[in-house]
Image 1 (tube, rainbow, N blue to C red):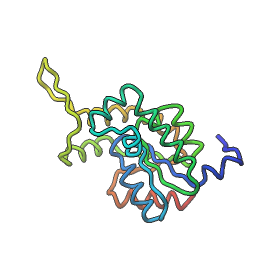
Image 2 (image 1 turned 90 degrees about the vertical axis):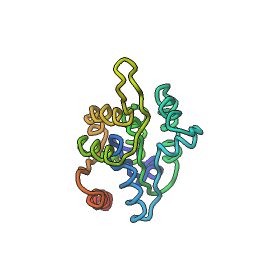
Image 3 (image 1 turned 180 degrees about the vertical axis):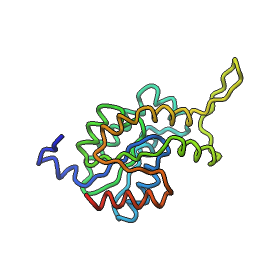
Image 4 (image 1 turned 135 degrees about the vertical axis):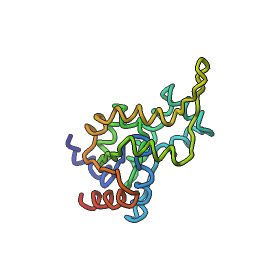
Length: 188
């Protein structure tokens, strides 16, 4: 999709990072922006602030009633109005919403951070972090909703691939992923 010439200035040099939760969007994006000396935006963080969500369960509940996704779109619209270069890490769900996906394509270059689900899950388990845990009453099993979200979004990889202008394979170390991201951006 070609960007009309009069809109190119508004959306010039923005790099939008998409992918499953914990694939490296925020970590790599923040570090790359610091090295390249350009602004960094995390749409999840900005949406949490704009909606005044105070804890993870508020975020979890709001995502089910579409409030969070609407907030993501509004935050991205504000970032789109910013002049100049920026790296933007989006929420995993934003790339799957048609209105957000369309805006991302207009904003700049969409980069899919691809990381194997096995690696993401292993790192999450080794981190000791736990998301919201649901207990199934009949069998007494616990379900970690963050882990389930990673698995769910991993099934949508074809949509991430279709939206992206570029794909960055991020299956190595953080430093290796960072080098690849900077090389991609500098090569544009």
